[in-house]
Length: 240
Image (tube, rainbow, N blue to C red; front, top):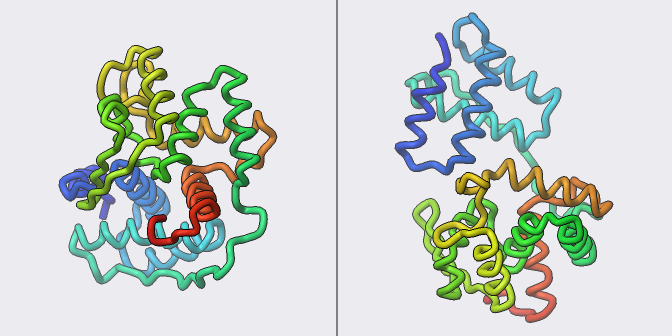
């Protein structure tokens, strides 16, 4: 049985799954298809694939791969081949040295600006100032900056994020300098919204230039820094 990735990708799109999620699921299915080769699809083969993943990937990543395959197996009506996830014990404490400090964040931003990489510097400032997910950057539009707030609608959930005055000015200045009259502010030269991969690549490059460990620099760590700094200043977990 061949793995019909194209059909499943279309199925996920109809279910309005995030583009990044669809890409991750397709990547996992490509991995399984390469492992399966011309052999028939059986539960034994899925178990063997699971074992091969465990030898090279972290448990959480293995579970992401299995989630993609299990969803596909339901789609093609082969639930008999589904396998269980690995049990992952949650860490009560965050690993020491894993978090990005405010000093490191400021060094990355200032180094990026000094090198003329203003776009990634402003992206990092926006994520950190608003506690955004990278998937929410497309809601950072010229209109939102003018209206002082972001209206975010993802996965059936809606929320409003207020934009600080200094950040709004930076966003509108950037848009004007780069001839972005309307719509998403962070775009490529062709006008297309930046992808998750482009943002990650630019963040890692900025971290290297600033002498900060690349493993500390990813969008969610900026959200964490936002939360830490907000609570340090306000001591209000409800508002946070």
